Amino acid sequence: MTNGRTEYTFLWFVENYSYCWHKNGESLVSPEFTADGLEGTVWTLYLYPRGNTDDYKGNISFYLKRSPYDGNSKDFSLKYELSVLAVDGSSIRSSYCECTFKKECGNGYGSPSISKMDEVLKSRKADYLPQDTLSLRCKIWRGEGSIQQVNEISARTRIGIEQICFHHVTESFSKLEPNEKKTTHIRTPSKKCDLSSSLYFIDDSSEGKVMVEITPSSTKEILSKCKFSLLDASGEKIECGEADNRCDATRKDIQSLPLSLTRQVILNKKSEYLSHDKLSLSCECIFSTGVEYQKIERTLYEKPFVALTQMSNDVQNKDMYNSVQKLSSSPSALDDLKAIYNNQVLTDVELKTKTKSFAAHKIWLCARSPIFKAMLTNDMKEKNSNIIQLDDLEDETVQQLLLFLYTDKLENL
Image (cartoon, rainbow, N blue to C red; front, side, top):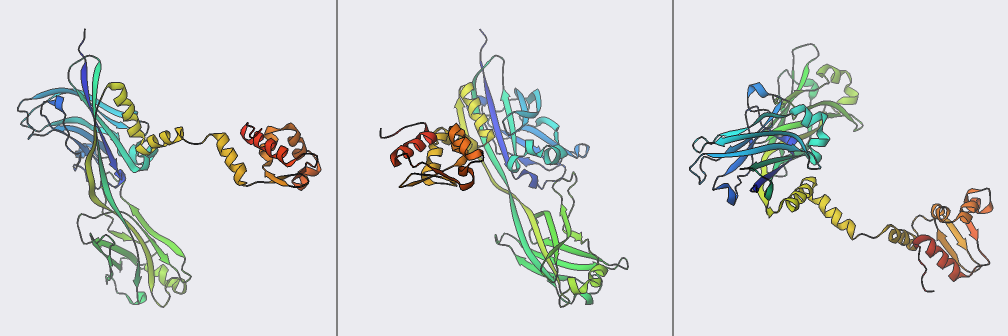
């Protein structure tokens, strides 16, 4: 009889992934993980959002590494599978290998090109990044045989972002000299970092290139996205510059950007663009602020079927899992119809006896009764008046009739 094996699954969710600030060769590192059956070894995942070497620029590199400081002094052989997951938990890209991780090296194995940057951030963003969260999985195991036990560890890393919107007003714009900077200072709500915004023009042509320079006080704040709009005399916004370096294989510095409107163009429309010789810019900036949260959130020791079911639920999102539970206890469609009838929501026809009027819905009466359908769709008075006269029926009879049409039930009989 073949002995069963234990599989260890590490799920890693990276929120706000598109705001990873890392340059080529720089890595985002997961929390460390281990388990009883891993004999004291400690592991981490290394993700290189812009590739681990120059040869792999434009790729995402993904590695499993052993800590050189774990409690096992021996080399450790295992099989592993590294995967990038879709929203439904299926694997989009995978890398498999059988390797020996040496103790003293702290070495790692994996894929230098698990996915292309453009595929993750652009062409298949909906598959890879639901709610801007990248889902990664590492499976490790030793031995052969069918899976008898699945141990699952879930971790989450959140990239911090801060959006800052402000106005930069430059007075006496027409009198500015080349390279003369007009600077305004902005205190951010988080108080983690202050900004300075400088406007100047370069006299490298007859037109004059207008530059905006955004400088955070902390080097940990990386400008990832910005947009500039000129405010004209009527307060309308005219877009005049934007940049986004999140998809760059080599992350460009966008702290200094030219406006699409030159100095001469602005001066030529002085009455529109320079009220009282003031240039008013609306500025929107989004900064990546580093890792703001990182934690192992859950550890499960389950039999395979239970664990795999739980994994699927987790990958698809905890909210989705909770929604399924809620649906099971939600009212039925007939209960909802009864509530709409009782509350008289969007009613558009009345059924009248000699003493009382009952509000209802044309579409439901037509669906439930061929008689009502004929009245309300043919050229009859009921179609035009939105009133169905039922003088020969008692109030209680009409009430019970409508109740039956909306719920398939008769009450109080």
